[in-house]
Amino acid sequence: MPRPKTHDDALRVRLLDRAGELLSTEGPSALSLRRLAADVNTSTTAVYSLFGGKPALLDALYQEAFRRFAERLEAVAHTDDPVEDLVRIGLAYRCGALADPQFYLVMFSKVVPDFKPSEQTDALAACAFRPAVAAARRAVESGAYAEDVAPEQIALAMWGLVHGLVSLELNGNLPAGLEIAPVFERALRAQADGWRA
Image (cartoon, rainbow, N blue to C red; front, side, top):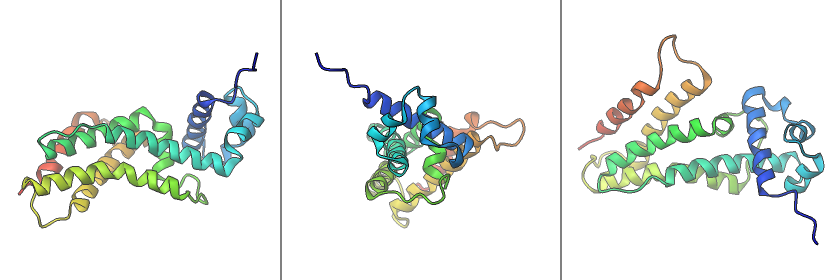
């Protein structure tokens, strides 16, 4: 009877989740392969077997983060109202960030200053932005949005708004007594309506 495979995808995901937690809460000095393996109750051999070393682990971490994030945004169904779709993509952005906070800081900051992503990682990062651009393009083409601004600029403005609010929320940088949740959707809708023809 063959030995069960212990270095499987479930272990890979647990290692990536924990690596994201270490980086986002304690910084790059906390991420050693030995500590990561111990935290996930496996061996450094397993980490090397799955990733080949720390640079490949970091690239896999970024890929996993952007893959999950892009999947959430791409899962927003298209409707007959592209402006509403853009709002729903913004809502999905926040949901994705709150679901995987250990990845959010890793994706959108220089938490590992010397890290150079692979071309595959860059491609996955670009995928996350595409749903917003596609919805903005449909809004322009349908006449809901004015034609004097490129869809990419409209999507970027929405992206900046949600990124700023979510970053304040996740990093605990809100003024005392204020919360994002009660105003997030309203701010998003106001921004989306501001582009109407």
